Length: 290
Image 1 (cartoon, one colour):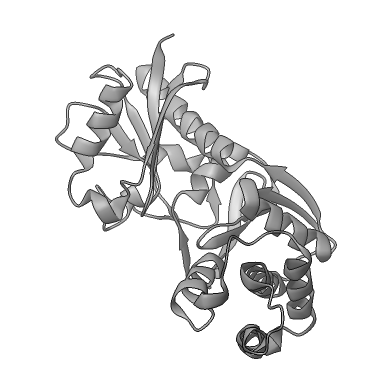
Image 2 (tube, one colour):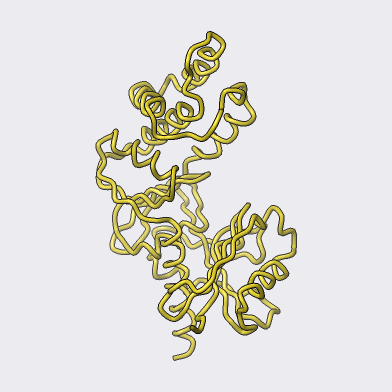
């Protein structure tokens, strides 16, 4: 089968590449930890090595999203401003200059009031092609409102990063054994935060105190429940939510959303990224050929 393009999601710490045919079917895949933090000016080398491993032709075009288009990335793709029609995203892709291979990087989105930015999630929303309130959990969780195919507003929550910092670099680190799971400790901590979010810092220290007193603290599950609960209080939604998430993190957010009475439709995050990149690629290269 003939590849139509290579699609790349290039983030701060990770690299994912898929070869896609003319129908968007995945023909091959490469993943690595060669994100921006480790790339250090080796963008062309890293990309071409992965393409070579998949026997991609030298003239195969490449569509990219994520932090690769940031100021510290390979080549900056300036933010589009909200409110923003999702169909405007492909047309705003920028080409990496001075290369024979046609490589395009999709832009991120910005919001002025309140100030916020995203990179990568706009591509997932493009692939989702659905109106409503969308939750995209991650290191920096995003909540977006899409109306008539237009992102009207969004917000970012540092829940994942706070979990990483508290579980690895705080006094709670010694009790963080194993991964967080959707267990009784998670749900108990979640509901406690939903009921009294103003006590979050006191509750966090309580995890430490419980351990010192020989009581069960709930560990990573309890910490996750507190932080996700705090995010849900801040977002303040209790309606139909589309959740774009994979694996265990998706399970935790789905459980939290169910607790606040939301109806959840869960969508695979990888699938939406692939779909968004493919949709953008079709818009760019088919339009240029006609």
